[in-house]
Length: 111
Image 1 (cartoon, one colour):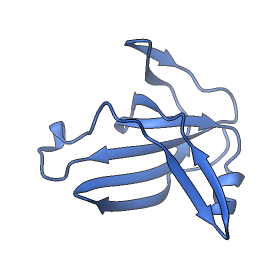
Image 2 (cartoon, rainbow, N blue to C red; image 1 turned 60 degrees about the vertical axis):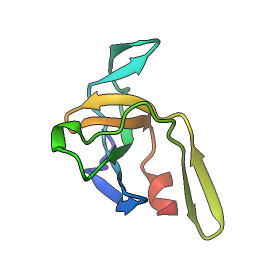
Image 3 (tube, rainbow, N blue to C red; image 1 turned 30 degrees about the vertical axis):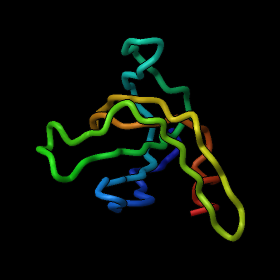
Image 4 (cartoon, one colour; image 1 turned 90 degrees about the horizontal axis):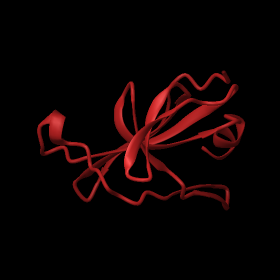
């Protein structure tokens, strides 16, 4: 695996919604696809980009925000990277929206 080792890019609250953006080493997860949860195995040398959305006013077990369309644009020095294919996933850290990618360097370049 490429070494991301849980690189937290953002941990903030906007309009009452807690948002955490993280890059980590990819691992086996469940991914929501075509109306059901299915196993998702990462390819070799992949990292995992994930966004967790939570309502901080709710109990921890009910705080995750489901059924959202998640798009993120990362910008630095006038260059934008837009990621709009984040899938609902469930893994070691619970429910989140995520996508696997092969290179950690492009995230580090812009963040």
